[in-house]
Length: 410
Image 1 (cartoon, one colour):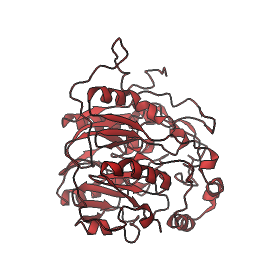
Image 2 (cartoon, rainbow, N blue to C red):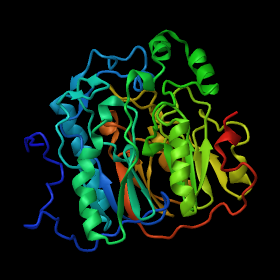
Image 3 (tube, rainbow, N blue to C red):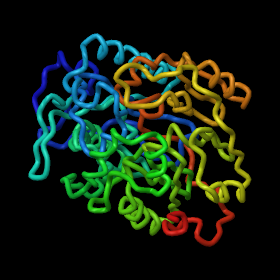
Image 4 (cartoon, rainbow, N blue to C red):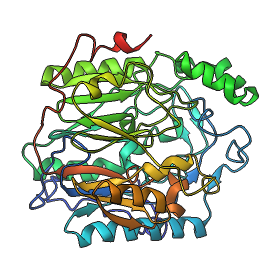
């Protein structure tokens, strides 16, 4: 799609192609990643260019607080001032990584202003590509485009097609994959459940979540890549508002024949969306847990049986998220690990930085708070292309039911 360069100054350039139409091979490209803590060598960092606040949809309603102006009245393009400031943060983050020798790519330009219309739904606009972590799942030597549940994000994968094609041509072992495309019709959601949301108290929404009653039905195969936590041979997937059981079963059928073990996790959370501000691996044997979103009873067992330490994150520095932000204050723990001893933390989160310092990390402060509203924190704003390291077995002590969906779905 042809778009104005003025609207997308930070987007990656279109692929340079040979006369045959095949992209040029880019030297020294390697695609491979098995976890979130081995040494990072190549990453995609999101952009805020031309981002929109779309109309609410059945999947997004529960993520947006009932009293938020984002529930319809603010639909439209974000202000240029906020876009410029978010890009200032994201570009600074990218430069910080580049200065440490990490290759950084940016998503391509797609016109998010255009109305999205399919045979099954229509919505005012697309969203944007600040958080590539939601869309792209790097699993070993493949990159998978996820079947996300927000209607506004239906075509978000288009921003990565050129980059992924380039990786495919440049690394002979790289495989690019697409999970089944969902329909996202009204039949995909509990529409009466969605309609009732804004009238429910926090206690009532928590009770529904504890019963694992979510707005998404099992009609489509749905998951966001940010609901998937990769730990070598073990993959942990959060069941919640953006990932349903059909999505988890698809991940199991896809990856278990390759030697992975897929586990389901659930948390005591009103609005379980994305695992990376709830339960985060820091290095082998060490996990960071959101103290306000504890694991369901019994789900610590596999970590404890394999001598993993689980520490609770300190409280965020802020009482409220920035204006027009979808996410909670717990983006404080949404960090980017560069290697087993180095972590990027948002610069205002002094308590979180102090905690990492005590855990033995070199802490790199990164100014990103003004980009939070565009899709999340430091981990959200990135997607792995290459981390050095191999597929390790961090959970050799398995037990009956440890990677059975049914075991956890009680």
